[in-house]
Image 1 (cartoon, rainbow, N blue to C red):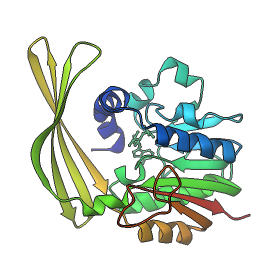
Image 2 (image 1 turned 120 degrees about the horizontal axis):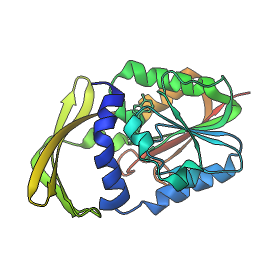
Image 3 (image 1 turned 45 degrees about the vertical axis):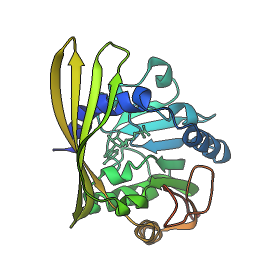
Amino acid sequence: MSTRDLWNRYARYFNAEEGFVFPADQPELDFYSRIRKEYTGACLEIGAGSGRLAGSLKGHSVTVALEPSDSMLKGWATSDCELAARVQGIGENMPFRSGFFPVVCFPYNGFQCVPEEEIRIRIIRDAFRVTAPGGVFLLEVSPVFARRDSEPLTERYRADMPDGTRLVLREKVERRRNPDSIKYHMFYTTIDEGRETTEEITLDLAVTSRDQIINLLKETGFCDILEWGNYDHTPYDDELSPRLLVLAVKGI
Ligand SMILES: C[S@@+](CC[C@H](N)C(=O)[O-])C[C@H]1O[C@@H](n2cnc3c(N)ncnc32)[C@H](O)[C@@H]1O
């Protein structure tokens, strides 16, 4: 299934979870706001989804939200549409001029949502291409996924939605080694006035280490790489950090 087809099916569940089932992650939103204030000029978000970070990434210059999925793009709130220019497209072949964006980011493990290594490499190369000389590229990944094991099918939540339906997620985790990935088999059941419908969505997340990310960025040409282990700018620690945030410069 293509990226676009997968995210077209997954969009309504992802957006329900991020917008309603789980609380907003304020430190994450603040982190992206701070980055946007510190690094000025036109900003590109790769894999912008339904604009969850649009408020944080708005700035004095234009913010461009690149997203492959029609359903994700349709999910933008009307008020958020004013905060960014939405463009449909994929990170491995971006419809932008070389060197146009002083700030480029690929947040929230979007990079790991691309299971094919060759395409992930092409995304980093294209991110380098569209970054302005002297500009920065911010990438967020979770090397901690490498420590995740397979898990049997269990119920994760049961949530009463604002439209009166109930959403239930049952999930099985399959840890795979070659290629190194985590396959989430998600079974979403919608209960509407007693009627139940279940949809299965499978998300294959690439497992990637801190060293693989840093080497890939360096090989692509990025330099002066800063690393943090969380949104509060704590140093990255392979054992303890919940995520890896890297800020890499494209030299002049
Ligand atoms: C985990 S979601 C994050 C969405 C949004 N950034 C957020 O934080 O809510 C990952 C996004 O990456 C997009 N994506 C997947 N493959 C992509 C690709 N090859 N190029 C660009 N975006 C991609 C998906 O459609 C999805 O919207």
